[in-house]
Image 1: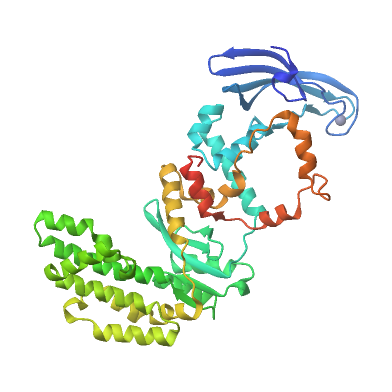
Image 2: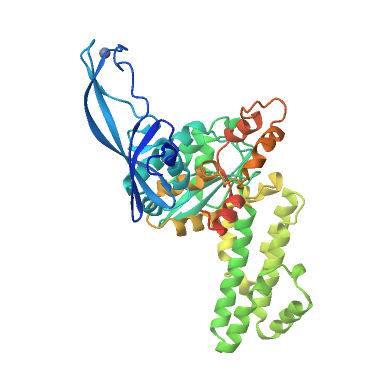
Length: 445
Ligand SMILES: [Zn+2]
C-alpha cells in the first residue's frame, strides 16, 4: 500500500512513502511529470538545480490528518539562465494546502467552528480564518441579492449590540445585517441597493433612525410600522399590569396568575370554555386586570379594520373610551401611537408585516450560541452565505446506479452544463430562515 499512487487519489503525484503515526499520515510524494520547459522562456534546455521539501496539508484520510512532504525540484534554464521550482499541480501554494482541502475547508467553515476544523486537518486556526475570509469575499462578489418589493428592517442583538437586519418580506429571506442600526449606516446601505424602484414599501419597528434613513435614501417610498410590534405593546402593557397585581398577592395566587398569563394574552375568541370561565372568576378578584384585558381586546379590534379610515376611527374610540384607571398601563402604547400614527395607519393601505423577523431572530440566536468568540463579520457571513456555501450532502449512491441516474437526470438539453434554473437560483443570495433553523436543529450548523 505504501507506494500506491492511488493512496492519495491525486493523479499528478507519486507516493514515495507513507508513515502512519498515531493520528497522522506523513506522506512523501513527488510529481509524476516534472516540467519539460522553462516557465520563463519556454526553452526545453533545463538542468536540475537542487530540491526542497514542501510541506502541504491535504484532506484527512481514514480519519487521520494528512501532511504531504513533496520533494520539489528546482531547475536552471540554460537558455535564459533563470531558475525556477517546478509548479505543484492541485496545490494552493499561498495556503500550503491541496486545492481540494481548501475547497472542503471553505464549505465546512461556514458551518463548523474553526477550532474543530483545525483539529481535524492540522491546519492552523488563522489559516482557516484566511480561507474563510477569501471565500466569503468570493461569494459576495459572485452573488447578487434581489432588491425586495417589500423590505423589512428590524434589529437583532448580536455580541452585545443591536444590529440592523434587512429581510425580503415576501420570501422571508435575510438579505443583510449591518454592524449597527444608526441612521447613517442604514441610509448608506439603502442608497446602495440596486433597482430601488422595485421597492413598494418598507416595514420597520418604531425606531426613528430607520424612518429617517428610508426618507433620505428612498424618498417617496411608504414606511409601515410593523403590526406585530404594535400589538406586542398592547400585550406588554397587560403583562406589566398582571405583574403589578400579582405582586400584591400571596405567592400561591400569584403563581396561578403567572401560570395563566397566556389566558390574558391570547385573543378572547381563541379561548376555550375553561379559559373563559377563568376570566370570569378573575373579574371578581382582579377587576382592573379584566378592564385591561378588555382594552387589549378592543385594541386588537383596531387591526381588524377594513380601511385606514375605519382603523383611525376605531383607534380614536378606543383612546376616548379607555378607563382612567388603566390609562397609565397603556401609556407607552398611547405615546407610540401619537408619535407614529401615520406609519402605523399605513398598514391599512399596504397590509405588510414583517412576520419572518421572529424566525430570523431564532436563527440568529442559534448562530450566536454556536459562534461564541467569533467576530460580527464571521457571524454575518455565516448568516448570509451558509445556504450557498454549505449545501447538504447528497445521499450516498451505490456505484452501480450512477450511470443510469446520470442519464435520467439530464433533461435533453443539459449536456452536463448547469441549467438556467441553477443560474437563476445563484442570482440571489440570502438565506431562507426556515431552512437554516432546520439545519441548526439537526446540528448541521
Ligand atoms: Zn528560460
